[in-house]
Length: 242
Image (cartoon, rainbow, N blue to C red; front, top):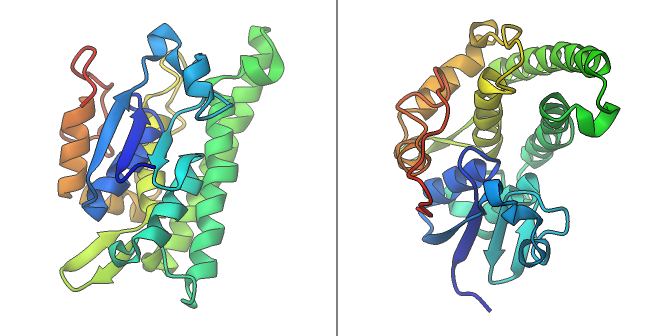
């Protein structure tokens, strides 16, 4: 049994969401670099932790957990004082849950199609382009809906704590995905993404960049000073498991 957390990560992967959450909670953790260039995420050792071979995995005293939203929810319930999610008895719990799983099951799932169209529709470039065009249109609608919801219900993004506003699990998840929308795929026309089209989210991302958790994660993974509002490609220390 472990008595602490170990995050299996790769720079600028979904593990970034979990790193931010752990930093926000002030929880000590170790990191284990998953070398994607060497296909370490497809190794037998890694698949023993996550049979799908996807990143992240968080090793915990209760065993290894995979799936980003599952890890976030488990951490939020394990450390309720951090306020990442409303507690199970809160009247706002259902509201936060539905949007957290919308981010996971709908937005993140669509991003995977955008990034890896060949896995869904084959190798024909024309088919891939048609699929990606449709996914970009879907993502724009998703962001507009989320922006509208967060304008009406800002507690979806921020919790009012004694020491000021602190970010929620949905905000951490969404910020990373909006970063990826602005950057990836590197060969794709990304002009469809315009952060100014979602003003409530743009403000939230700018505020999140001022958090110590963001500074620590950005330093560790080489994300630059504005990882969400003006992102640049990750430039981590070579071979470093920070």
